[in-house]
Length: 265
Ligand SMILES: [Zn+2]
Picture 1: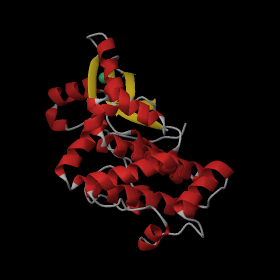
Picture 2: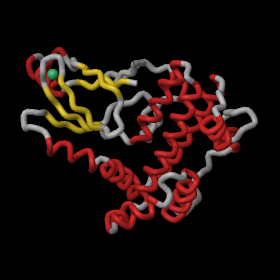
Picture 3: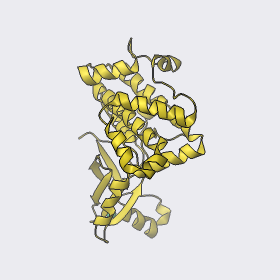
């Protein structure tokens, strides 16, 4: 999976010299990286350092979409499942932001106790959601699938994920699509509920910023001639957007967006 990131220097030059020509990006194609930091050199020799602000769960979901489009159904399911787990981490960060800021080391100790155990993280996020929002978080279960007309055969989402990830089960196209669609709808539903409350909407934004703290250190280590920028890339799914957004089918068959392209190796 590769991203196409526009050189910010070329973009500025082209907009300045010929504004009537509109947006004319000079893309640099780079493999997706874990730390969200991209050191780029464009075809004109401009050096830039870009931090992409999209949370990890968003990249993993995009990876699942790409795998689905390419016919790698097992890989699609594992990416969607990883996206959901990172979404829970994102929520845990947002729902504990005040405590985390007051005692960062304490937070790390608690997080360390569950970092490798996804079931513990689900338990934690459910209780935090209940405490912070005063109602239970909806569940991604058989009832959720039924409500949205989705089916994973006789399996519930958790069991489906487990047999794919741990037992090498190879799902068919329809099950992979339904699993991706279930996670897509679930994440957007949970986010929409949280974002309707101003305090928690603000904390979600802070959680995004917090995840970038380490990445920002990279900015301080480059020469002044290197252009530095930090922005969100407009992904195909926009899974973390709380706008009504496209349907999952619309996402799956959407053409690539202007700022991002996906290519197999
Ligand atoms: Zn350039």
